[in-house]
Length: 67
Image 1 (cartoon, rainbow, N blue to C red):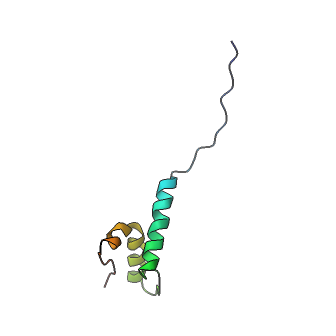
Image 2 (image 1 turned 135 degrees about the horizontal axis):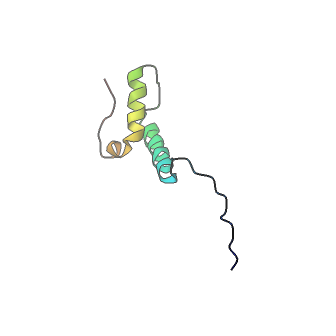
Image 3 (image 1 turned 90 degrees about the vertical axis):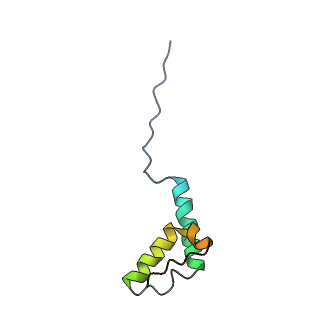
């Protein structure tokens, strides 16, 4: 019997394609709701990051602006 050597594959990083698509969609939703415009303070930056990660909440009407 002849055996084939296993193919050499590189390990993929821990970021999946689904997570990447989720974050891109979050960035688009956050940008269309003006979370990424005028980032001058830490509160505005945190609000933009939260809006990107928690974008489904924006679609149901939750305001993620930190005051």
